[in-house]
Each structure stands twice: as C-alpha cells, then as structure tokens.
Length: 149
Image (cartoon, rainbow, N blue to C red):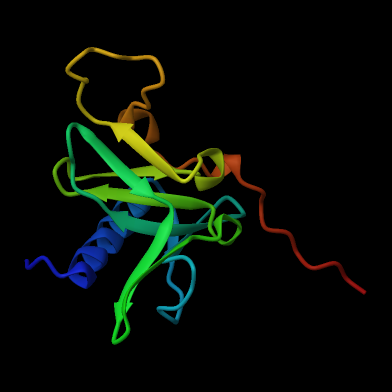
C-alpha cells in the first residue's frame, strides 16, 4: 500500500468495521463522504457515531489531534472538529494492528495513548492504550423513538 492519506483512511475504516463486528456491533455507513463521522456502531438500542483515524506508533504512543485536515487546490487546511457531532474517535494503529476507542469530549485538543512503557517508567498521567480497546455502547444514550402526537 502507498502512503496516500485516502488509502490509509480507507484501511482504518475497514479495520474499525471488522473490529466492531467482532465486538458484536451492527455497523452502518453514511451515504456521503462529507458526514462528520465515518460509520455508526449500533448495539442494544444505542447508536454511536464513530470517526476513524489512522495513526502510526511514535515513541511508544498513538496520538490524535482532534482536528480535521484536508487539502485542495488552495492548499492545506485544518480546523478543530466539532466534538458534538461525533461520539467516539477510533484510532487504528498499523503497528499494533489494533483499534482504540476514545471519547473526544473527555479530552482536550488531543489524546495520546501509551502502547509501550515509557523509557523513564512514568505512570502518572499516562493513558494505557489497552484500556481503550473496546467500545462501550452502554456509556451512550440509547436511541429514542419520536414522541407520538
């Protein structure tokens, strides 16, 4: 596979799709590339909007800045994501072959998950990537039927 960002994004979505199915979710895809999320995971009456990021391991961590980036004829662009439009960011790491699920509302402008122990053995303030391996639908509000009139 080349290094084209679209190819990496497609691989990340495919890995997230497979991982969520293994966890017992039904996975739904938007009919547009312009949705703020890449897929929706559904289980036990709960829909979870998931944005997928492909991130390689660097210095023992996988890090995601909560920003949308793109390029066009006018150049390279970046802006903060609207955290209210997604529930979870799934980080696919090709080095570990794993998906990690984080709630952006629980973090500031970025999150760094530690995959390997730090060289100085720091543990305070470290977020162990293994703790983010499963999506917990129970943490989200179940879908509600519209009120009848």
